[in-house]
Amino acid sequence: MTVQVVLVHGIRTSATMWRSQVEYLTARGNPVRAVDLPGHGARMSEGFTLESAFAAIDDAVRDAATRGPVLLAGHSMGGLLCIEYVGAEEPPPVAGFIAASCTAIPRGIGLQTYRFLARRFDALPDRGMWLTNQVLDRTLPAETRPDFGAGGYAFDTQDLALRSLSVLDLLAALRRIDVPLWFINGQYDQLRVNERLFLRLAKHAELVVVPRTSHLVTAMRPQVFNALLEVALATLEAPDATREAPDATREASDG
Image 1 (cartoon, rainbow, N blue to C red):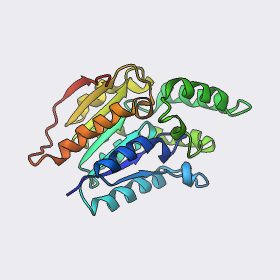
Image 2 (image 1 turned 120 degrees about the vertical axis):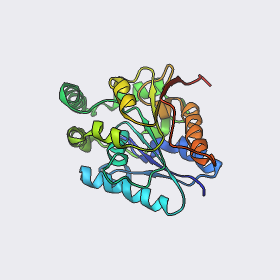
Image 3 (image 1 turned 180 degrees about the vertical axis):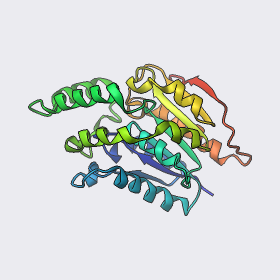
């Protein structure tokens, strides 16, 4: 059966951030669904709760699972939510999992500092969009630059969503994940702080670090990320596929 792919975006952005991956997967012949979480993208008018976010992910996964094995990929906040989701006590129908730019525990002083900075940024006259655009213009390639904000920015949801993440029990969830798992981080990603702990706790995990790349690894290096999607898909498609993925760290090529 053909591997189905579900993609979950990070905070403030939307399903449009995955356009490069959707194009790649569609051309490859893998059905793909990029989810808009509540309060984001096409669901901007809705309130964000953890329950509604998990429901959005679960609806997409269970629908895809009726047609084949599911590869779930989440970025940043979406990745954190997906760790909790895949590592539930009653596992969902996920055959493989990519957790991108999300190897940090969202609580304590780190989360408080992030929320403080986000609130200060949001308090700027243009909600920080001038600076945001300057950074994105200088770091994202032309092929993905329009995609990142095409679905709008969830300014009003950001602080609530960040606060909600503090109740996630990611360490317990990681211990329960029993499918092939790839952690993908940019070399300069600020959320790499707990990557070694996450790698140690997950049974079948591999860590891939993409050189010269920031937190926005999917958009900054789309060809590399798509190549890593290919690795995951090939693993799930192999006739003798096993859940025993090697515990290893890799540095992605610059191709």
